[in-house]
Length: 262
Image 1: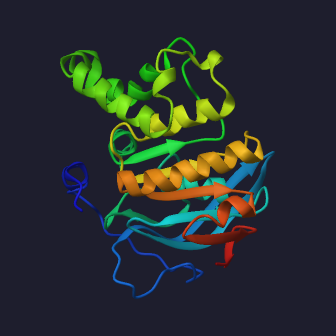
Image 2: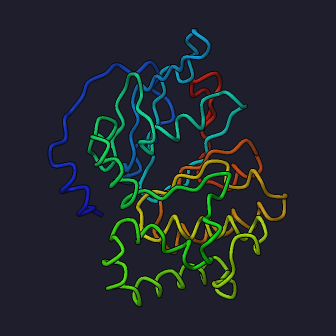
C-alpha cells in the first residue's frame, strides 16, 4: 500500500551505493512486499577519546505485515539498529530504505515528519506526560502534527480515534486517569495506543516489556500481536527475552554488531 506522505516527502529520493559486509536475515521469494531494507549498516560511537564499533555490517529486510524480533546481549547493537531504522540516528555507512525510498539521508525536518506520520515508536520507558489524562496522552501525536487549531477543528473525530485505540488496548475505562494512577502495564498500553494514533505503517518497539513482570509482559505481547492484525502493522521489536521473541514471526540475532542467526 502506497503512503501518500512518503510519495510527497521522498519524491527527491537519492539512490545510494554500498557494499554490505553480510547478506543474512533477508527473507527470500515469498512474494511479500519489502517495507524496510537496511543494507551494509555500520555505526561507531566515540567514548572517552576512543572509537567503539557497535554495528559492523548489518543487512536486514522486513516484509510488509511482518513481526520481527531482534535479540542479543546488552551491547550487541540491537537498540542502535532500531534507532537507525527509525531515523533517530544516522549510520556511518550503509543505506536504509522505507517503501523503496532512502531515508537515512533525509533532512531533519523530513525525518521528523516521517516519524510522526509513518512510524510509531514504543520504548522501555513510557514517556507519558504526567499532567495529561490517558486519552490526552494517546491523541498527543495528532496535536503535534496538526497544531492546536488543527486539533480543535477535528477534536471530535480525533478523540473518537483515541477512544478506539484505548478500547483496543483495554483501557477505555481509564481514559480520564493520569499516569500516576496507572500501573506499569497500563502505562505501556497507553504508550502503544499513542504510537498508533496516526495510523503508522511501521511500529518500532525497544524493550516494550523490559520494565514489566512476566505475566504483564505476556499480556503486552498478546496485545501487540492482536494490534498487528487489527491495524495492519509491521513491527520490529528489540528484546533480550527469548520467550518474548519467539512470539514474533521471525527472530534476528545480533552478536557484537553482526547478524549471526535467524
